[in-house]
Amino acid sequence: MTIDENRPPTSAHEIERYGGLFAKRTRGMTSSAMRDMMAVTARPEVISLATGLPDTTTFPAEDFAALMARVAVDSSAAALQYGPTDGLEDVKRCVVQVMAAEGTSVETDDLLITTGGQQVIDLVCRAFLDPGDVVVAEAPTYPGAVPCFTSFQADVVQVEMDDDGMRIDVLEETLARLRAEGRTPKFIYTIPNFQNPGGMTMSLERRHALVRIAAEQELVVLEDNPYGLLRYEGEPLPTLYSLDGGRYVIYLGTFSKILSAGLRLGWAAAPGPILERLNLGKQAADLCSSPLNQYFVAAYFAHRDWRKYLTTLRALYRRRRDVMLASLEEFLPPEADWTRPEGGLFIWARLPDYIDTTDLLARALREHVAFVPGRAAYLDGRGGSEMRLNFSGVTEDEIREGVRRIGKVVGEQVALYGTLTGVKPAERRKDAPVVPLRRKEAS
Ligand SMILES: Cc1ncc(COP(=O)(O)O)c(C=O)c1O
Image 1 (tube, rainbow, N blue to C red):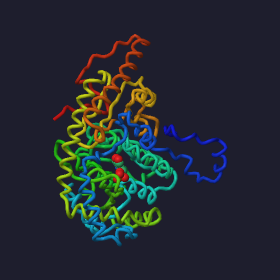
Image 2 (image 1 turned 180 degrees about the vertical axis):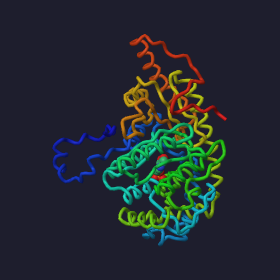
Image 3 (image 1 turned 120 degrees about the vertical axis):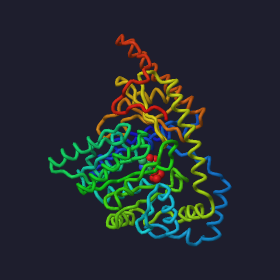
């Protein structure tokens, strides 16, 4: 269901016209919650804490112009031409640098340049999934992966998380239960760093455990890592890909959050036989990712300091995260709780059970503020009282004002509940445990 108010609703007659022709797999297809909300959140009066937009205003326009001019002068014909499906060698060498900054060594032959990291999820689904196949994902999971899983008719089993990421004890129980049912997951999907949407980071111990389980049970892991280099505090942790040594882990990386999302360039690093399948899928999907944009990336890495820009982004997002945490503390009632991410772009908040964040969004939009309702991150109806808040794409003033407005509508719901039930609003208890998302004290 889309919230785009400008588009007239599809009539029953129109649906009927094509109904019998659509593939069965399209019946379960769902629209991405964030994509739906883009039309609403693009309105200037709306403060959007919903979309996960990086702040592209920080990229110097004169650098963009100079680098594009350089591409035009040096590589015009090749940049305007089709390119190899697996991507330009120069761009792969940039990826090698980025992955080295994550402490991960990779050869250019292990890489496939893709149209955003999103395409890696799609290509992995294409390569591995038949209808009904099991995918294990985190609970909550990346809302943008949900339409991908549903369009390939996956049976997604979600495993609870806590402050240390995916709970490996629950994963082991889940795998044992599936095995008893004669079902083997095709892959385990995880976002180990500053998870989207939860903000949690998988501990080192759990990383080792996950890689060990994958090897013992011969299971593929899709490691989705757009945010690893956006760490604002704490020590970096090794990627699953590096711990695994190139056997069972497919790594997803992207230039979206360290350079530009508009380039639509990402990559997969994977064992050879898997890479070949992904490549075949990509040939069918789009032949190659934009050579023009790839030449831009190569020029950027050759003539600018990509690490310096990353440092700028880190400082900016860190401040915004801190403003959001302080605003939540100030404006949300004591019944609410939220995560304290050490990096990334998102905070995950949990409200009392009696508040439905999908309903709350309608009220919030009347106050001109938006967030992603928690249900978008689950495939089984959970998450009704949860919400994802983004702090990267909005100014500090907007964050404060946006959270104040959310606090207002949440406060109204809490008061209404109190009136109806006679239950007094809770005193703020900073040490109150919240399971499974425990609040982490700031370090
Ligand atoms: C966890 C995760 N994976 C994948 C993506 C896709 O990113 P892109 O296609 O821009 O590389 C995103 C984007 O927000 C994300 O948060």
